[in-house]
Length: 215
Image (cartoon, rainbow, N blue to C red):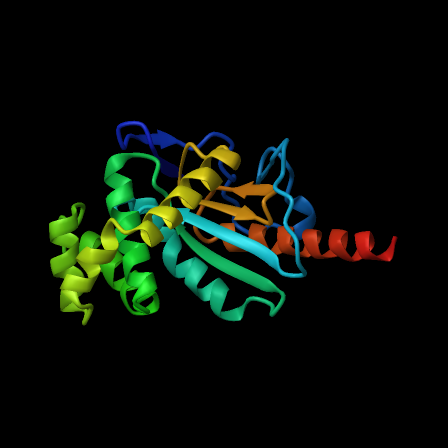
């Protein structure tokens, strides 16, 4: 698989991509350094929930390919797992879409517009990569255009964008799509495989958390 590299929006070969096999890999086959990466400096996450974050950019074809798999995964995830869709803001173009995402989120339209915006860009070939185009498109989805534009550069949205950037730096992201499991494990690979690896890592985190509590 390829993924979108943040420098110049260039498509780069995914180093350490999962090998394709005719049969689904067993959980025991998932190997650190091959199927997922382990961060040297993992984030310390408090609370009982296991956090899964998907970093993406709406203009990325590989993010578009992964999206339905992650949506299906999210609909059946365990109750102790919190899923966060995090628009990457690794360069100015990606940041415009991140701002649009967070403005829509603050207005309660994230669920309604997320898949639709992916389709508008990749199915309908719409160029929705600047504030003006985004505000008009979101308005077609029922979003108040004036309020959208007010929120776009607001402190609330800027704070969310800053947190996304900080997360990308902490997790050493160089491209998208990337799924981060509990601030420790980084997953990039073939769309149909990513949720399987995520489930494996969620189970691993769950076991580790239980063991830590038992001490």
